[in-house]
Length: 265
Image (tube, rainbow, N blue to C red):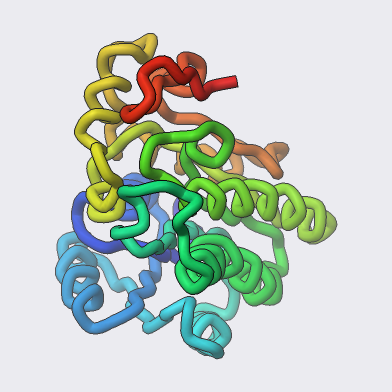
């Protein structure tokens, strides 16, 4: 990754998977830029950036605001001219609607969740493709709730399913430009986002006790897999969802509120 230039989108704090990825690729020589959606996140990202002891631009980009994505990548183009990779680690849903039933999701929350968690990747890919003249890698983060019912994941699971489908279509669109689009599906990791999922401690415990490796995945392990996906090591891989979850996805789990209902395929 020496001298590769990339944009990390979605760092919230030092427990973020996006930050774990940033640390790994930075260690391997990548030059990084970070985006932030608001001033509160800017302060955290700025502090983390300083810990890298490297010159890393920090650029405002609230993907829910019209024009922000275009302006952010316009600024990146002005500073760097071109880039080699992007990490999309952006998702949002009303946490109060992740504790009940999916059927009770409101229209407003459904649309906002899909817009921020899924459509933003499409818009980012469109902007990024204009500043990747030599090809590159775009990587998104997803979760098992995209293809199996996970208790209390609700509309976020629907958004991740749409995200994974988008990855395949975007890979087909951008492949002729030698731009690869993939996703990593990590196991259960305690982050600011996952803490909003109801009974998340139960899911963490279930995964630890039932996955083949009998433990939960570590953020740094997702970072190492991201290093592979973002670098030329995976030059022939695109449209793929890469699982990093200690084998969690091969077991399945039971719903918290319906112990007799098996919800894996």
